[in-house]
Amino acid sequence: MGEATRETTEEAPDRPARVADVHELAAGMPHVTRVDGTAGNAVYQVGGKSFVFFRTPRPDAVDPDTGRRYDDVIVFWVGGDEDKTALVQDPDSPFFTTPHFDGHPSVLVRASRLHEIGRDELAEIVQDAWLSRASPKRARDWLAAHGTADA
Image 1 (cartoon, rainbow, N blue to C red):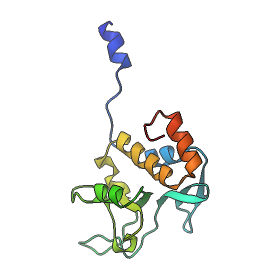
Image 2 (image 1 turned 45 degrees about the vertical axis):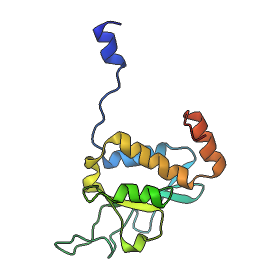
Image 3 (image 1 turned 120 degrees about the vertical axis):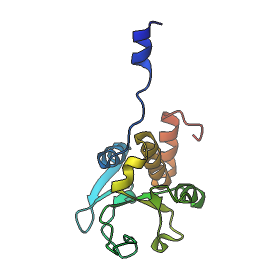
Image 4 (image 1 turned 135 degrees about the horizontal axis):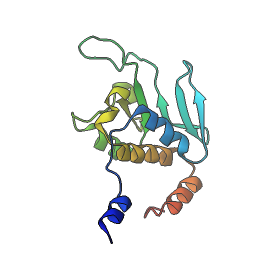
């Protein structure tokens, strides 16, 4: 294979994730509807169940220095406690949780820190969020169509 051909068939390097990617990835999953929350914030649902949503400022997610409520929190459902722990255990991770979400299968991330992960990782997180909320049949069908071993 020639040098030019090889370069065009290799995958492009991952780039930092953006808020627009969250919208694109969530909306691109099958059977998804976007509804507006009480403040007009985007809520992505599958089968009437939220899997990604842009949260309004709440008293449990605040800047530790100023006490101001974060106004850019995005919530992603996860498959369970192990998945949640894997995302929030590293103090340098942009993912976090609050006591309000204790026992809830979700993680939070500030939009202003999305760039700390790649778009590919974000795609996996959105897909996992969707899979955690989709019906078993929809999840099986999606996994089978994407050649995933979990199908």
